[in-house]
Length: 313
View 1 (cartoon, rainbow, N blue to C red):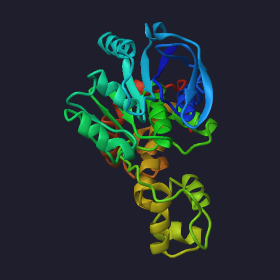
View 2: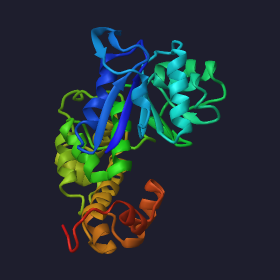
View 3: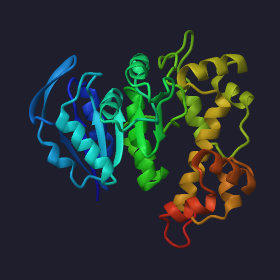
């Protein structure tokens, strides 16, 4: 059982507190505890009060420790000490949104790349010049420490951690249970123009769903535009507005995700994994896996495969 301790540092949004509970509790492999320096009732920013049941002793023995909240205000000394101790004893350290300020106050981000909500990235960089602040990324990992931007990006980071621990198939199941898109890559921009249906049309979600069902085909911009019943130019503009990616970038990410699932859940030969995921050849599969994941397909399968002998799909 992987133990997760979410350290709440006020001021905090109630939504941010709910994110690790929603994501990790959807996976049976996690035990999640919410703790703070002063347990009990806690006001939240623009929301109802919450009750944080556990003190900082919940951090002891945790495999992952996540800082949530603070809004840039000074965190209690005991919380900072507990985070430093957790890092020193080998726990995986992360923060959601403004929790990056807490990690910064603890000195855990010195000399590292990190991110936070884009509206506060300038403040983080000014107050902590030793941090290489990345204001336009969804989440960042450096030196074994993970930081995320706000809101949906915090969900992306938690799903990313699930994928690291238990693979893409489990992470995508958690995403479906949370009714959110599959894990987005951390290098994707925070700045998505609008999640709402574009003018004079509908969301491209049906076209994206159709593409996911046909990843093994050599889909082109014209194919996607034809399904969406719009021009290639309009498709590209609207696709970027809704996802932050071009259509072909989005397709590549989904194909790599599909390949990861096949490597985890089947024993298919590499050329068949490449074909079924739409990556073409075993050489292309290797290139994209190394570029995106940092592992060859063989090494990835050795680390994450959970398929029974002879399994195929």
